[in-house]
Image (cartoon, rainbow, N blue to C red):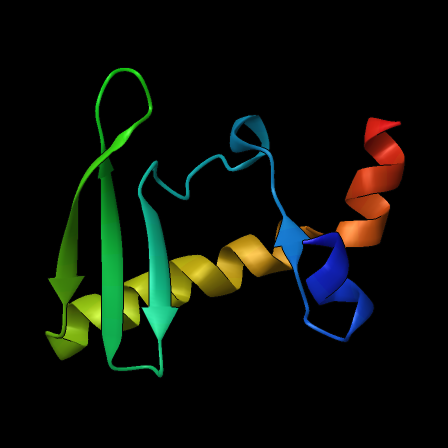
Length: 83
């Protein structure tokens, strides 16, 4: 993340305990039409990925992302808090 942020990528962090009301799913949004929902086991290892293309579900994940971004902090700020 440090290297990507240094060249302009907007990387933000939101601690799970600060994500009240946003759900517990981990997902990636690609080009507003495709969402990859990551599935984990008890050891926090990825055991599967669900690809979502149904528009209403993609919009729901986009809304969750937007709410998370509102509360998230930039990489540099997050890194400073951890030191």
